Image 1 (cartoon, rainbow, N blue to C red):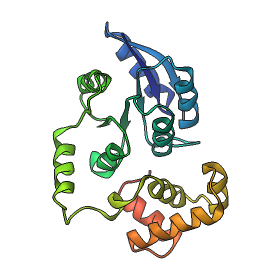
Image 2 (cartoon, helix red, strand yellow; image 1 turned 180 degrees about the vertical axis):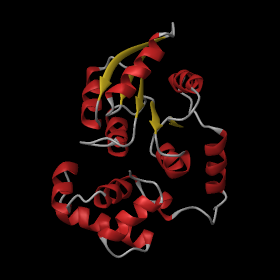
Image 3 (cartoon, rainbow, N blue to C red; image 1 turned 45 degrees about the vertical axis):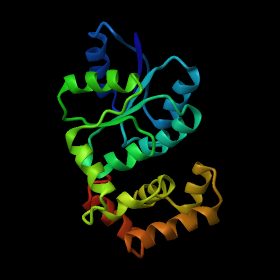
Length: 210
């Protein structure tokens, strides 16, 4: 029996996914969470084999939650199920420890296949993501600037783009203001931008936030 935890800030999404997974003889939903902070509580509880998690959530989103989960339980598979297209996040999150990435518009059967695949300790990679990963290995000149950001840089970028202040971010991420400012400078340099409003425009333009 594969114990699955569902992390999504929309209750109706969790309910639909729970109902669908409960119809499978080898799957059992053992926990639900509405944000990344609650997801960490589920991980601490230990009654989970696979986490199915959204990206866009309040109070510690999926990107930040993934890093925290992998820091605590490196071998716990995390399958990202997001409304964002694969082209925006998939390769970055796979490099940061996600076991797979699916868009919410995928065939429901694919979710089952992905859960079973990552539970066996393997990555679940769609054909499209495999192609993007191959392009990255060959130094694809068409790679978008944000795909080159590190895990922390991506977290800082998304928080700044959503309007969060450096001081609040430092408190939430348990970092000093100076450290967050350094990450901000690196992000600005890598994206070739000069202001927080530029970051917001970039994120919206590339579908990295809703």
